[in-house]
Image (cartoon, rainbow, N blue to C red):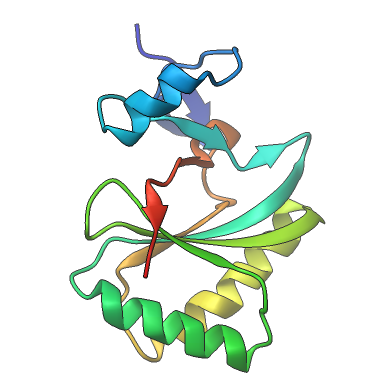
Length: 146
């Protein structure tokens, strides 16, 4: 049975089955072999420790280079660019320290507006204040994007 989530007069359905157990080597191996998909929450105890950009466009190389230039310009020094499930799926993680949802939203809006000047809108940002907490999740990446 799929979990139904009511949020701001909208209905969402859980994308993943919630399993409350530690990750084991075999589970991670199945994820890396793309037999299953593992997701993790971005919001824990009301705080965010990572901001996330998820790119799903046709020009990952261009996105990669523009993100690197933008982050240098706005002085974001620590970030990780990783591959998602497909070649068109790139995840950019920006570590932050115990940021609340409103502050995270503002920071992501600044980043997104800057990207919009250079690229068509083919990404999403998380966490997203317009989504329920259970939808502010990310799938574990598969490898480093280079």
